[in-house]
Length: 102
Image: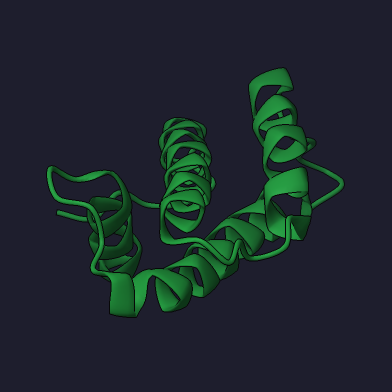
């Protein structure tokens, strides 16, 4: 889970990600969001809340969006992925679907 927070910081921290790592960051953020989405909908006996569903629905188009060729567009997509991922983490921790790390 620590890697997720490092990637979130790289995408939405005070400094934009380096040009050389922007595409790799996009791939990692997509994997994180996909994994969290899978956790959200994994158990039919514990259906996701309306907020979880809203975040998953917001994230799906971002997962499917092609990787932009330009750096600024790639950073923009990384930030959108990071915000949805961070919000989903927060909601999943509150609902005890995942554990908070210290």
